[in-house]
Image 1 (tube, rainbow, N blue to C red):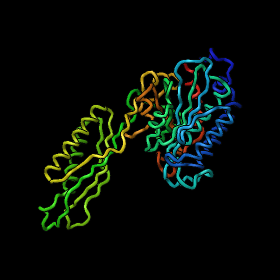
Image 2 (cartoon, one colour):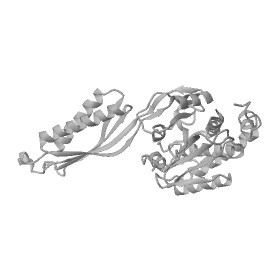
Image 3 (cartoon, one colour):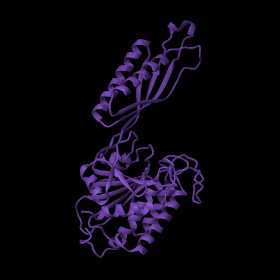
Image 4 (cartoon, rainbow, N blue to C red):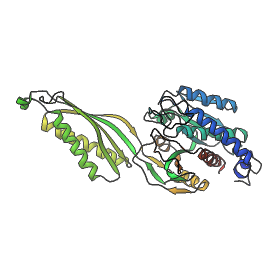
Length: 381
């Protein structure tokens, strides 16, 4: 690769030019801090979007908006063929920050590293704007990662049209600073987020045989969940919130149970959802109730493809990590095209707070590491 492009500013940056590295690091650090000051919730990333558009404009890059998200294409040295894409997420969390940083936010917080992800991709944009990569590259700034399925919505609006492969980082507080990790195949679980709504008939407890007990049906359902969760391998079925009835001495006429299914196998997911419907029908028959399953969201598992994983592993030696039951909407991309997400480690002596915590922070030197790796991906054949 280096022999093919010996004169590019990219190779000077990657190999030896400390001044160039200092320049790009200063740029990425400023971008990260600017973005950290303006965290916005899912679907409301208006100021964040305007900031990114301004930076792309300064680099002479055109962009296309999709709601608050956007993407920019950089022409390669040869035309035609599928593009390589880099994706970052934009939204923050409704958390009150307690880091004490001079650039901390007053409301909401980038407590999942999205400010770093955006800074890395903008750092790559700065390099590629001055040094054309061998092939066309698309930079994707995605809105709505934290629970709104922004990836799916952007895909439906054409963000991966003519894209052949896609890559992304996620900061990892459990991995040593500057190290990278990933795994071949499933890395994050798919999810089905659903509510079970049960309708019964109220009656006084002294005449409870005249009622239809929604609470009893709900208890049968939750016990079935525990049984299935214990039985199934590589799957998690959990009910985390429930409410039923209105008074201690009245048969409950309604119940609501909020549940999640985490899975790695789509066929097994469908079987378990069918099993839950059967168990609910049995509970309805036993208690005279009527139940419905209201599915709120479905995410596929995030599956790293062999080709994209091997390419990332050539660029940066990847430690092997196990699959997690947490969800990541980058999965919508890897469901459609080759892709690989990798952890970028931030663990050191002074940064130990987990993701989604009000003290989450990291050593900004990892921004440079992420930029180097992502840039090299764009030059890797």
